[in-house]
Image 1 (tube, rainbow, N blue to C red):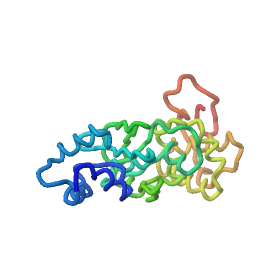
Image 2 (image 1 turned 30 degrees about the vertical axis):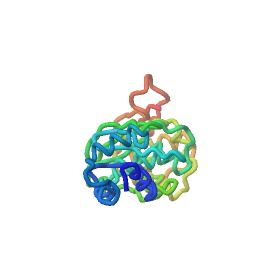
Image 3 (image 1 turned 45 degrees about the vertical axis):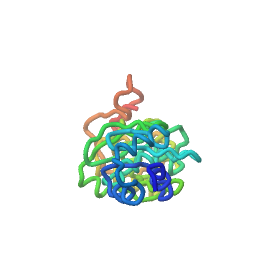
Length: 247
């Protein structure tokens, strides 16, 4: 076979990224790359042919000439051999809860990485402890046949409540919560409580504003410090004395 066959080898396996440090690359190299070709030479040829785009050291996004690979799949594939999951905007869009254009994809890792521009979106890695990452409510699924490690609906909301900067469309959280069942709200409340008091305060504020019933897990929350619903936003919105949250 030839270097030019590499992208199709990956796409047949529904893999969106070539990572020269991965086990998948070692298999692809043994099966596809002719003897005598160095990885760098092979990838330079593919870049010139516009079959791959270099997005980082040893990282190349595969260009499918037939159809565009889902950005969420590319984002997850960048970290395929690391514990991770996609959360907030991209996860909620995948779940059908928001329909805004997703130009920033938040991926949770246990160690820091630089943002990666994949073309349709900017992939923004964020970090939590390895212990917290291990127990996060995330699962393996697919998008157009490509594997994606994805936060559940509840986990995506908890992440947005605990770390508002992780979500671009945070102003849509109230609408997202309105679509939750009572059981989902209870799990969201439990997750928010486990994350931080501030996350529970923000959840309580949003539910109070919507006029819906409060999950039992929030009944005993008695915050002593005021927080902002969206830190960094200029000015202060309506204030809830019950939840000590500036909207």
